[in-house]
Amino acid sequence: MTAALYDSVIADFYDASPVVVSRQKDVVFYRDAARRYGGPVLELGCGTGRITMAIAEAGQQITGLDNSEKMLQRATQKVAVLHPEQRQRVTLLSGDMRRFAIDQQFQSIIIPFRPFQHLLPVPEQLDCLGCVRQHLALGGKLIMDFFQTDAARMHDPQFLKEHFIAEYEMPGGRKVRLSERIAAFHRAEQCNDVEMAFEVTGADGSTTRNVFASRFEADAGRRHAAASRTREPANLRRFRIPDYSGGRRAGIASTSRRLR
Picture 1: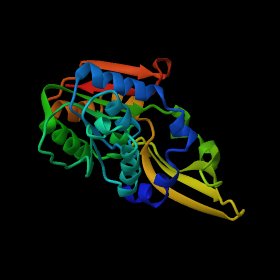
Picture 2: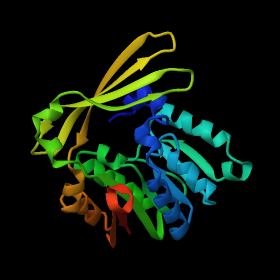
Picture 3: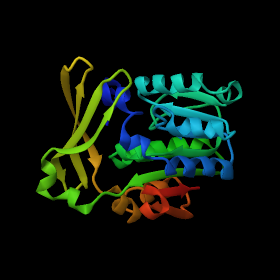
């Protein structure tokens, strides 16, 4: 998914979406990890700052990087309402997680809510991990998570039909209906082409519908846990993988990897 997709529509409706609002346990996970491993913290794909603000409020210095200007604008608005001492802990940067250069090393680098899965080719994964390694302090930790989908979403024709995801109301009275469908399966690559539809009804009753297409890893949880596409890049970049955690029972819907 490109920055243009987030800038065009997702940023406007992201924070109010029940899909995002309902994700609270991963906030606790990353906040506690920042406390455990210490700062400063670098968050790649920080978006609107859902995790960023929680870590700043918990007392850690954090830098958030994202390539969507509109998502960063939302994050900047959140920083503005923090207490002064918390605001001083947050730095927001526009940049690409595949190639970034910050004049600082970090004790913890986190990639929450699976933006690493937007990097489909292995060379892009290597580029990201290479940058991470350059910015990690000695003994630092990289913590990242992956989505493990229902295997049926890799082949079942029922997912080719548009289906309802969520409906919610925005400030000002606008109502949003979010739906999606899989436009194409790419079984060999374990990726899907996905269409997301935002149907927005204004306070005056007018309706607009925007449909956006992107490519997602369809089964990253199994693929990455099977050590096929992320373990190899991690090993090539000389990371050690000491721990796996997560799962729905643990309150995190995707598998988290801590790379050192």
